[in-house]
Length: 340
Image (cartoon, rainbow, N blue to C red; front, side, top):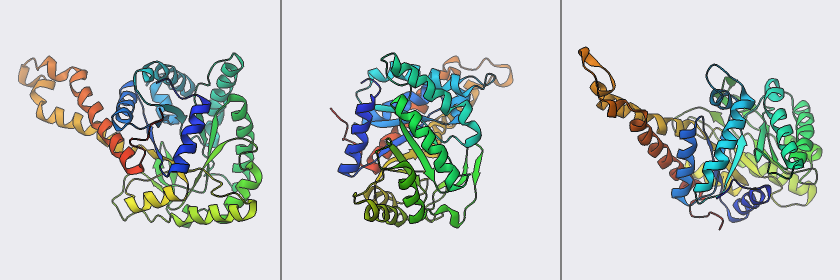
């Protein structure tokens, strides 16, 4: 199916919230990891979200070019063509963008989408994330308000983060402390500044102990009830049930109970990166170890071209990552829920 239109993307998110599931949002860094994500969604019969971070976009532009907008644009154009061959709806999203990279990433991409929309075309991406976790709340929301207006012009959805996520992603490091838990007051202030849909559609990543990276179950102290308290506080003030569409960041090591509780409280999107990176790389490591004398020209031998052909281990890597995407869709209950 084609990349989701703004209308289809809005319907996707609405269905997730009303029917009690969430979409896996899979980070990719190459055409092959893109295909792995698309294949996984198709095999799970799940619609989904595919995203690139600032570092992923830079990598996609070429290791010596290092231009985030070039990489993101090339990725989106390529995805628009190949996604048409997979029987699922997919939205394209840009992941964590801190303040110092807005001018070199999100703002130019929003302008490009606005120009496309003015020509009667679809936006380049369907949503973008502003990561204001490193700045104070008022500055975070001031920037979010400006970006939300630009998102309306581009017919895209804005994702914001209110609170701090621990761990590390793309060089952004967050300490693991009490700041990981967003307060109901933060949620009320967010609704006051950004509205509840009247100023534009946005998703909110409130933090409830989330930590980026890979951790064993039990290490991360998640409190999904933080989301429930935020929804209740804003609902009581504005008379709207479950006013926020939440995003779950830093979920590696989470239990099924924690994930399903978060969905019950309004999570419609869960970011998955660390686990799929490993799922992609593990089959490559297996191939190299089992075929070391074929991928290497050992002791003057010539090796085995079939073993070191990138397609040999690339196919295994794609299958491994696709299987992890299927698992994610099953965990989040989006499997079998694709739109017709």
